[in-house]
Every structure is written in structure tokens, then in C-alpha cells.
Image (cartoon, rainbow, N blue to C red):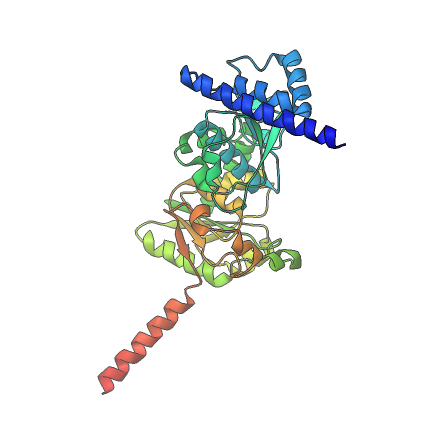
Length: 356
């Protein structure tokens, strides 16, 4: 047993020394170690990887010097999470000179006309696990020289900063989805035919209010925030006629509480159609979640979001950095209650001063 351990130790030391000498020699003759060198060195000590590479070489001849490194992601969550993962995948891939891909049968391919799909799955994929779901991970700026699968969510605009044009092109809705959304959008926009601005209000409530979600730190935005944000938009665009289009997973609550004449609550449609409707609006108000986030991002324009998410001190709060999650041009807003209290206090002080 001791002899076997000694043999393994010597073998490992030999490989390390040989690899180091090879690297120094390549550097001395100004040859940068390529992916081909990395694969060959790794095959010496990683038996499962060696078999994987052997299979890949036989099937696709993929380890030629011109073969690209691939990067993909594993799907988690729902549509908003998928869109973050795909956008971040593209940004990370372009920043690292990788070839991004998803399966041509992926759920996203049914919604958007994606350009980076493959009918087959490259082998020899290593996992890259993010540290936090809603914080930017700088390790993605310099990836290892291996094929990678991005694990978890990668929910930060910083991953695809500078590649917004490419991302918008990727998120082009398929014709049938776009046509349904446009028909509904025009129908409800037409209820105020003089409207020159359409502002979406995405209200997410149902899954944010269940016990398992609230324990983690999820929360729904209160009615006071929505009213405050709508009044802000009315003031900001006071010279234009506005229609607020409300898209929500809780139609009854929204139609009961959002009843102003300039407000239309749209009955719930398929999630693919509803996010396309959100993308057609001029400006956006969002409560919580990634679905509304992407509706606002696709729309462009002016965006207001609920600033008191997630619950302070919660587990989710520890994984969440607002500066990484929300673009800096978006406006954070709360219920406005403290602003009203401050105004009342100023009025009282003014009256007291006059009396004295």
C-alpha cells in the first residue's frame, strides 16, 4: 500500500514538473499555450476527461487548433430567469472569446429567434458555479480554458454590459407571439385613443406572497408604491396623455385597486404574450421579480422599480446587490409615505413659526 501511494505521489510530481517545464519552454519560444496544449496536459492525469476527449476527437475532431471553446447554461426557474441566463451567457462568451450555445429545443427557442443554438451537445463540459444569484461575479471575466456550463442564475446587467444591441437582437419574438401581443396591445391602448404614451405597470403578487417565498425574503410591492410610481410618471410626463397598461398575475386584485380613468388592467394571457406586451410600452413601472425586469429592459424608456425588495436582513437580501441587479439609469422608489410625513412636518413647522 505504501509503495502504491509513493508511486502515485511520484507520478503527480513528475506531471507537475513536466507541465511546468513545458509551459516555460513554450513561453521562451513565444508560443502561448493554447486550448490544445491544455487538453493534452489534462489528459495525462484526468482519466475520465481523457476518455471524454477521446470520444470527442473520434466523433467531431473537435480538438483541432481552430476548434472554439463552448459555453452554455443550465435552465433554472422561469422565463425571467432564463432570459437573464441567456443574456449573461452571451455577454460572458463574447467577453471571453467563447462560442455560446443552447439547445435548439430549449424553451427559449420557442419564444425568441435565437441565433446561438446547436442541434447537438458538446461533450467535456465543466461546471462554473456562481457565488450569488443576484450579484456580479468577476471571475466570469477570465474563464478557464475549458468548455463550461454556467450553473444557477447570473442575474446582473453587468454580465452583458456593452452587448445590449446583440442581446436585443436575440430577444426578437417569434412572429406568432408578436402578432398576438400587438393585437392585444392595440386593443387596450385604443381604449384611450388620444394616448401619446403607454406606460406598463407589472404587478407580481401570487408567488411572492406564499409562505415558502416570504421566509426566503421575497415580498410583493404594496399598493402605495404603485400609486406613488404612477403619480411620479403622471408628473414627469404631464404634457402628454398617458395610458397605464397593467399586466399582472393577480387580475382580480389589480382591477379592484387600480381604477383610475387612465389605467387599463389587461386580463392575463400566456406569459410569452404578456412579456411581449410589456416590451411594446414606452416606459415601465415594475414591482418585483425578473419577469417585470425584462419587460422593462426590452421596452427601454424610463423605468421605476420598488426599492424595498427583498426583505431587509433575509437570506435573499444577503445574496442580492441592487447595484448589480438594477441598471443605474432606473429609478428606485418606495411607498412615498415618508415623503408625505416630511411634507406634513414642514407644514406644521411653518404654521408654528407664523404663529410665534
